[in-house]
Every structure is written in structure tokens, then in C-alpha cells.
Length: 622
Image (cartoon, rainbow, N blue to C red):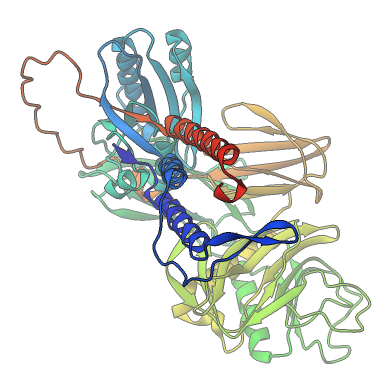
């Protein structure tokens, strides 16, 4: 026998409460005395009793409370499954990107499907099967069912996604399979032992490793450079243990700008320069050499426009103005940057419109710009004519950056300067997160969104004292550059990572067409934004009437792309059975219902005892 949740045994403290109640009730005995109301109970003129006198109702109540405590704690019995009993089976599938890798004509998911179909075919008639999947999240593809044809159809519809399988999703999938008599896990690499332990399964899962070690090439990153100014670069990585030939093609503006073959050394990266490009726009890099995994062979980037546009930098600090102007010109040398002190009247031409306004520790009053970036946003001042666009709700003396879009959790927090905590409106989304130094409460450090009057960006931390140029705070600079690039990018093109939540302002019901041709309708929220999560690498089209947006989803994960995964250690051969025809599988049989029924029966018996006692003696004996 065992307990599903031993912490629930704390309910057994109710027995101590029962003893305390009896001690209190019996410590001041009463006697019957004559009075004007015939007989009245009064405290007996004796010393208080310290001896607990137990009777039948006490033992009945203690038995009922003990039964209820064990029922809540999840008491169960482990019994051998009979040869003829109906059993439940859970088939758990990894749908991460590596399961789409091909070993010849079959993918690793195809091999897992074949192994699962053999398990289903060999199971006794009447056994039920549930299909559970996991990748970025856990999901149930099939509730427990006994129809073998339906189970086969569900297995046939499983498809791998272009995201890395998450250990948290595997843990959730195993928890979903906890009630099954047998659990079969299909993946291309062994699950972490701590994940199996955390799931607290009654029966250990049977792991089926699919796929053989295979070589793979992947595009790690692409930098399009600045058109007509600097070279672009593509980083290609070889995950094989031997040299791999690679044929790379790069397209921009509807034409091929690079096409060449080369050899990549084993377990090494190669930087391939190209360009400079003639114009801005979407740049696509593609590995044409066939390898085991196709999802990481394509990657997209957006080159800045070569058209000259104006940018404004406002800050009361001259050092900040200089740093931000340098970063703007590094992102796009075609920008014409104007810097000014917001506290000086007529420091810039307020009648002129700007493509981008960077506002450090000041407001945007009198500024006309298609996009605005608020750096260290100014708190709302009493007497202001309009409410703040980005309300400041607090501040910290020093902030730490912990997460950044496209990277996830940073290996080590980046210590920043003072920061202001901004309550983001619903039309904005955070692109990096952090907290106060030593605190646990997280708040957005950078964010971006589209308001009614244009694109809005936010950087919550102060950038004084050349913080963005500090090599020890590179993540702060990269988050700033990413925010600026998103603000000056075309509004109908987005470059995102697979698995990341995507928010697009469409303001009407939108048709989403995925790279595999599947379509579905998206409904905008009250801020006019539609949201989805791309699980396949490639091009997504969003259409709402005459408006359209194209989202390019990139996939790369060093763990999933490395197909030279360690093999699962072979289990020792089982000893020959000693003429025992029955299976040795254990079944978990909860008895909570039985214990609850026992408690109800005991309470009923106590009621009968108390009723008879009241009828025979008096109410004070009850």
C-alpha cells in the first residue's frame, strides 16, 4: 500500500482536536440539584478532572476521522494485475523538432508510430489506450479508448513541431499518464532522470529510443549587414563527427545574391560572408545539401531600408544623446539623426516629422514621429493635460536582466542601473524581463507594441554613464538594438522564432495560413491584436480584408539539432521466470471511496448510539 500525497496526513491533527474536545468536556463534571426550575445542571464542587474518560462515541469518532484522513491522503493498494483483467496504457510521444529527423525513408516519429502500433496489436482485447504528446507543452491527442482503428488513426495524425522539447512539458505529460497501468515513452533521447522522479509515477515508464545517430547541418544565425555599406554573414554549424559538404544559397529582393559550396569541419562552425546587399528587405538563407533534419536549414532576416529617414534623440544628458545616436547609426547608417536637450526651447524643429523619436527621461509633448522609443520613461507629473501612455508604477535603484526574447533565461543576470517599473498596456508585449537587484518580483525591461498613432517601444532601465557601451552588459545593448530594429522595420513583415508568442495588430478577424497550408481564423482582442504561436518553421500569412502581414518563423536549437544523441543504456536481461504464468505488473487501486463509505457508516452507527442513550438517560449524557 502507499499514499499519493503524504502531506495530506496533516489532517490527522483532527484526532488531537477530538481528544482536546473530550478533555475540555470532561474536565468540569456537572450534577443535578434542586431549584425553582426543578433540576438545573451546575459545576460539581470537586477538583477538575485531568483523566480522559473514553467511551464508545469517542472511539467511533476517532475511527471516522482516521478513515477520512487516509481517504484524503490517497491511500491505495498495489496489487498484481491479473492475466485476464482489462488494463489501461499510456503512449507518450515526443513531438520536438528532432523527431522529424529522417533515417532513410522514415522519420524518427514514423519509427515511434510503428513501435506503438505493435504494442497496441499485442495488447489483449478490451485494454484501453491514451495518446499523450509533448513538445513546447503537453497535450492529449486521444483520451483512453479501446477502438484499435481509432487509435491507429490518431497515431497517423501525429506530426513533429519545429520547437525544442521542454523538460517541463515532459513532466506534465507523465503526470497526465500517471493513472495508467503501463506507460510507454517514445523519444529520440533518454529523458532526464530528475523529470521521471518529479512525476512520481506508480509504475516506471518503458522508454523506447527511436532513431540512429545522424549528421546534420544547421544555420545558426544570419546578419544581413547594412545595404551598400557592410557585408552580411551567415553562420553554419556542422553537428557531425566528420566533415560535411554544404551548399548554401542566399536570396534577397527576389534574386540570388550568394550560391556556393564548401566543407564544414566536424563539430565546428563556419562564418560565410556575402554582399553587401543592394537594398533592404527580407533575406533568406537556405542549405541545399540534404541532411537528416530540414527544419534548421532555412533562416530569414530583415535588412534595413536604404532610404534616408530622420530620427530624433531627446535626453537631458549629453552622454546619453551621443550613445543613442551612435547605436541608431550602427543599426541603420542611412538615418539622419538629430539630438537635442528637451529642456532647451527651440532645440529642434517641432514642425518636422520624424520616422523615429528616442525619448530618454522625458515626455513626447510636441514631438511628431511615426515610432517612439521611451527610454527610462518619465513618471506622470501632476498638472499634465493627458494621462501617460506608459504609466510608471514604481522604481528600483538597480535592476537585473534575467530573460531576453530569442534567448530565454540568461546564464547569469545582467546588472543594470536604476529602472522604472511600467504597467504595460494590453497592446504591448515584453521582449525582456528583469527584477530589482536581489528581488524576485519580475517586471518588463523592454517592450514593443502598436498604438493608435504608431509604433511604441519602451526601455525601462536608465542608460546613463555609457551603460549600453559596457562590454559586460552586452545583453542590454542587444535588447536595445532589437527594440530599435523592430520599431523601424516595415509594419507588414515580422521575423520571429518558432515557439515564441506572436502578437500582430490586425483589428479584425484574421485568416492565418501556416507553412504547411493549414488555415484557421483568429479573433482580435479588445486592443485589436491577434495572437498565435508558430510551431513550424517557415512563412505565415495573416490576412484581414485588404490588410496582410507576413511572419517569418526561424527555428534553431543546439540541443535538438544535434542528432548525435547518447543512446539509452540497455537494461540487464530479465531473469527467467520460475514457472509463473501471471504478469508481474503492479496496479494501483485507490481505496478512498471505500474509506469514505466506512466513515459514513461509523457516523451513522454513532448517531444510533447517541439516540438510544438520549432516550434511556437524558440529554446531558449525549
